[in-house]
Structure formats: C-alpha cells, structure tokens
Image (cartoon, rainbow over all chains, first blue to last red; front, top):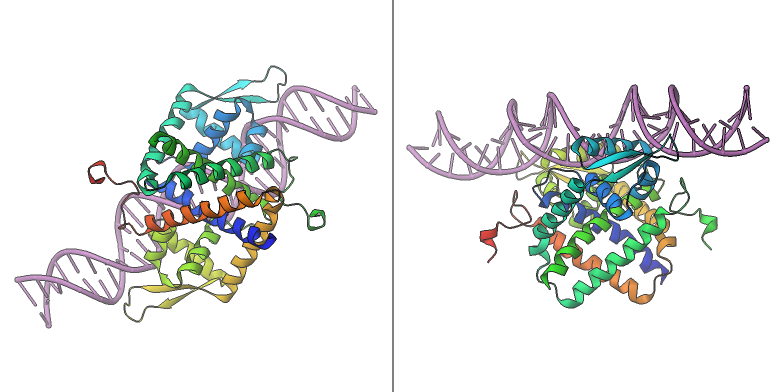
Length: 158
Length: 158
DNA sequence: TAACTATACATAGCTAGGCTATGTATATCT
DNA sequence: AGATATACATAGCCTAGCTATGTATAGTTA
C-alpha cells in the first residue's frame, strides 16, 4: 500500500507541473504564475507581514520582497506600516489587485474549459475532492516551523 | 453546472501551483522543476525532435534548446543526428538521466509522504483518478497544432 | 536545375523569479 | 546599556521563460 502512494505522489507532482505550464500558456496574460500565486495567498489569507507571505507562498523572503515590490508598483497590493512593530510592514491586496486576480482566474478557467468540458459529474467530484486534499496539505505544510523542510529526516519517519 | 466547473478549474490551477512550490522546496535537490519536467517528457515519450519536445513541454523552442543544452552537459540526455533530416536532432534520455529522474521522484515522494500518509483508500483513489484526468488533458492539449492556444477561438467552439 | 519558400534549430538579448549572503534598523532580553 | 534576535532590504548571481532573428537544410516550383 505504501509503494503505490509513493509513486502516486511522484505522478501527481509531474502532472501538475504540466498543467501549470499549460495554464500559463493558455491565457493571453503575460503575467507570471508567481504574481497570481502571491495575490491568491493575500486574497485568501488577508493582509499579512512579508515573512508570513513568504512562508505561505513557499518562497524565500527576498523573493517575496521582489514580488511585493513589483505588485506595489502595479497598484495590486499596498504596504501598510505595522503599528506594533516598526520593522515590519503589512501587505494587503487592493481592490484593483483582487479584480485582476478574479479576471485572470476567470480567463484561465475559460481557456481550459474546452479541455475539461466533457467531464462527467463523477470526474468533477473527483477533481473537487483532489483540490480539497491538496489544498489542505499545502496549508499544513505552510504551518511547519520556518526553515523546516517538508521532508522529515529519515529517522523521524516512524 | 458550468459555473462550478469554471471555478473548479481556477482552484485546480492555483492549488497545483502551491503544490509545485511545495515539491520544489521539499527535496534537497537544487535542480529546477523544468529539468525534471523535460526528463519526464523524454522518459515517457521516447527520443524525439527538439520541436516536439518543446510542444510536449509547452515551452517555446529556444527554451527547449537551452534546457537540452544544460541536460546534455550533465550527461542526462544525448543528442543524435536524425538520419532522415540533417536539420533536426533527436534528443534521448540517457540511463544516467533516467536514474536521476527516478531518484528525484523517489526522493520527492518520500519527502511528501508524511503530509499524505493519513490518506484513506478513498482519497488515494481520488488522487489517482485526478492524475489520470489531468494527464489526459495535458496530452490532448499538447497535440493541438503548434501555436494554437489551448482555448479555441469562440467561433470554433462548435 | 536554379530559385524560392518553408522548416528545424541556434543565437542574441531581454525580463522575471528564484536563491544565498549580507546589511540595516528595530525589538527584546539580560 | 549592551548584546542578541528579528524583520526586512540590498546585492549579486543563476535559471527559465520569452521574442526576434540568423543559418542551414528540405521541399517545391518555374
């Protein structure tokens, strides 16, 4: 039972990467996936500090800084001083940013619809559940202590 | 019924992108996802021409050239002259490359196992089916004529 | 067969995203 | 107050991705 799961996870990542490429090329949008991922995190998680954003997005802190700088220049996010800590800044998605995100998701979904239009109700349910499962694991992984690799060292795998 | 599918596809892409980031950071490997994607395509599709590889990987041709150049330097793929066409070259994965790919997939799966270890048989079946569905669509999309966006123009959607 | 067109790939040059290493300012703790 | 820790910024690098364009070979047609 454990071997199928191992290879299933390998397949899952591989196929997902292909889907991501497919999605990236299927819209006219020239924005990068990172932009939408960042907006997605801010949209679902609300305003947050930069370090928190980096962790949830699973990128290094300087990468988050770059992304936020770009997004700020575009007016899609704003940075607010953190009243409780002068070192920190809160980053929040703007209405414009939220609209752009929604627009992209809609465009994307529309672009991929023809490929998935023939799905039966069963398969749709499968994808819905898969999205739930994966989202749940991604959330869980994001809450590991900073710097912790997702993989536990071999000796920790009971 | 069609609206849920649209938003489901948006969710699917978003969550998959998070999974990809998670996977990228969960192994000690410093290789990029593109490397494994390319090897994956060559592994499952057999030796192929560069343009074919680019299409299947959903990247532009010069990007494929770069990737193949890097992989060749590493000994993970080889380029063979195409006897039938002096302009073209066949690219094939080497035994070393196949071993590296297998090793990475194993490492990756091992790294993510703890996150997915508690899945029940039902959920495993769901993920298996989801992998099938997505893989199928990715294949189908790859076979569209070159340059064709995944989305068909409105007037072509019979 | 010579010339044109099309195809397969390479090269150049750019941008963004990703990283590590390190700097700077503010909190916090002793 | 001084030392340490934390939050973020900056510098500098590499890879992945793109478009535009060049070059060599195939194919096609006059």
